[in-house]
Length: 290
Image (cartoon, rainbow, N blue to C red; front, side, top):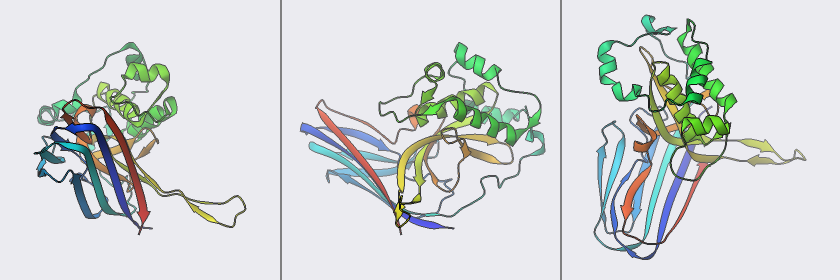
């Protein structure tokens, strides 16, 4: 059943002195290929003395370029949107015959065009051993993708980690735990070692959850929305297929992609600099059923 929701996401940076805010890039608008219908969207920025130039980055993601022309004591970025979470079958695609069985080869022209999405960035011993342990015998492609995604989910426990950046695959495999960013990066590198075209996805994950109180008398709603990371794999005929190793599932209607890039460093929701100041950062996000 379809659910229409209103989403509010706010990021606030408070400075301890009047501060020069240099140009910022904001990737918080649903990507062009988002399958979840978006009926309303707004981006509001404080301070008022700014300019917004909408553009598309080199990877076709919507990006707001912010220019400021006065000192500020606060930078606030507010996103509001309405989305219809209309269920769809994430397996509703057709794979070309030549790619229906793994392993397969991409056409040379496609390899040339999607070269950055095949780049292997890590070759540590733990990663190589993990890849070697995967059954790479001839098998149905989609089933193979799902199995590897599920394997990462089973091997790496999900944790919330608020520090910036992404840990290496070696660290994640050693710790056997990681944030959604770490699991996504690990899955990407595993797929690429297996010769598969992949990209990193930053977006919203909407979770609508109803439970019943212990006495069974009251319905309790635990809806939430999080900034999340997952992976998309390109399969000829099917196109980009979203897989979330943190959940061990394919991406469905409750995944709203914001930025898709060859690596996490270029998918940051907000990036930019200011002159020196002590900064207090806060954010919150809410989802309300309409």
